[in-house]
Image 1 (cartoon, one colour):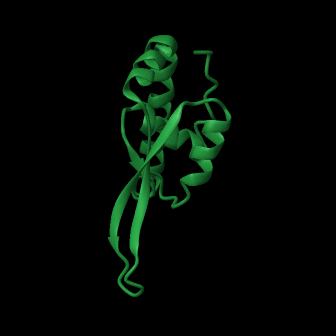
Image 2 (image 1 turned 30 degrees about the vertical axis):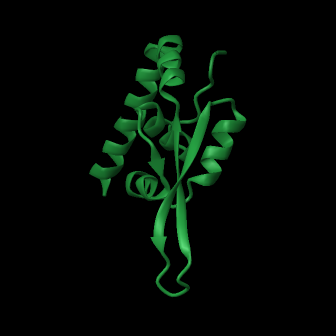
Image 3 (image 1 turned 60 degrees about the vertical axis):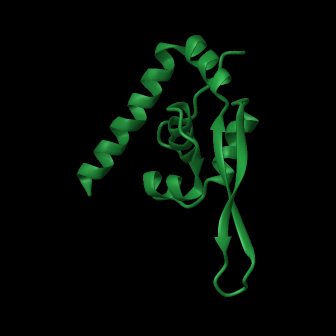
Length: 112
């Protein structure tokens, strides 16, 4: 793999990437709970465009109450073997990035 460029810590791309690099499979509802933003598709698009190997799975969401239509949603993640390779390649940079995102979240929560 080539050296990955991390997005800004103060961005939705950064928030999404930190969750995914932590080994999570992230849905839009997970992202909304964590970042307070419902928009996950665009940050994922930007991360993929930047070369991050993010894949997705479609999962069943249930039956829509009013239309009776079956719904679905996606979860985004990095495949385990690629995540292991990224962790080896990025090492301390990856840990510092996730720590910076966590610190920003703590500051935001404490301010409000």
